[in-house]
Length: 255
Image (cartoon, rainbow, N blue to C red; front, side, top):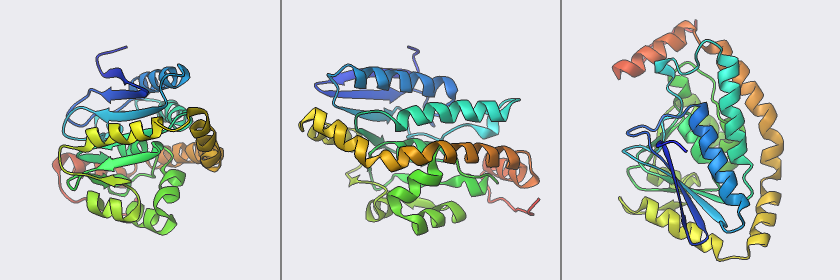
């Protein structure tokens, strides 16, 4: 395992921490490590719930499009990344995400792959794809509407506005809203409360509750790849990335 991911076991709770501060961008390699570790913990029988957390100011800023994260073969790159994401959605035990700072883009998708999200008032959930001239990814086409409802998901995606921790809690995107600095501790405590239930029953219930999501994800991920690749390199995408680097609001032309 690389130095970019650490794993520890706290009783029946496995804690996986990403170490790419401050923004914890992911790539296929990191997500593959994360999925491998999570599957190993879940398959051991000793871990009944998992906590996903990260080091630094922000939970996760997704893939670094501005740094050319898709490479020369975006279909292959995105397909590989979302394939690892599907493994995280498909874990047999519940996952609690400790979301500090911002969960943006694919980082929001990663947070929504978990069963529960713990946030603080300063947390921001940001589906920023519209500001980059891109289609949403990481399964958000189905995971986000399933969590907050179709209308709220559409609002978040179309406007690309930041959702505060308080609003996220009000609309069900954050399951727990806790004091600043208490996010990780609360996530572990919530995972412990899950782990106190009968483990076979919890796995069975989770399998039933996530069946529709898992059935819809493969087709949704395929479409997300197609649409993201189609929009990559458009003038709007170029303008969005440039504006993101300059920290200004982009002006789009529809080209």
